[in-house]
Image (cartoon, rainbow, N blue to C red; front, side):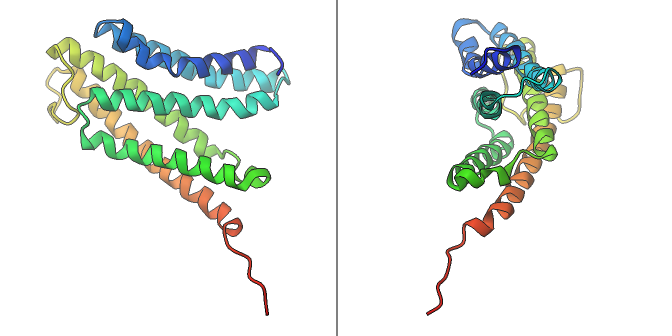
Length: 210
């Protein structure tokens, strides 16, 4: 591994992922929400920076190629678990989160099974867009949990705030985040199906005549 700036940023992003739930362990709310939001957004920004620098400075490496998607998945998965817990385990959030988590496990399993042929499942532009949308949605949902705690003294279940905005920034952020996470879940399912179709020829048993 080469200790260049892109690789260091990738490693820091990987370490930041478990730091998100730690914010709720060491800080009182809503400061925990703001700290988690700042940490998550900072890590998400490095996702774009390290890739840009690696290409611009011609410092692309096998370490970066391997750790970058792992760091992204760790960030998204851990953050979604935290948000789901603080949302009261509401189905409106659990369903898209389940789709996202299932797809990540499914595609990771496909890549592991394919081994050397896993390059067939290289990250597509649409997959990059779904990751970006996931991170934006998660950031807004962290903002919503913090605002809800400020406005109500606790975080209401997702879906229990009013559908019509009546001066509640928490309600506005909640529904904006929910809308984006559902769109992200749809893109996640789509890209997962695309990867499955690409891998399908290698999942069929060969038949021998005779």
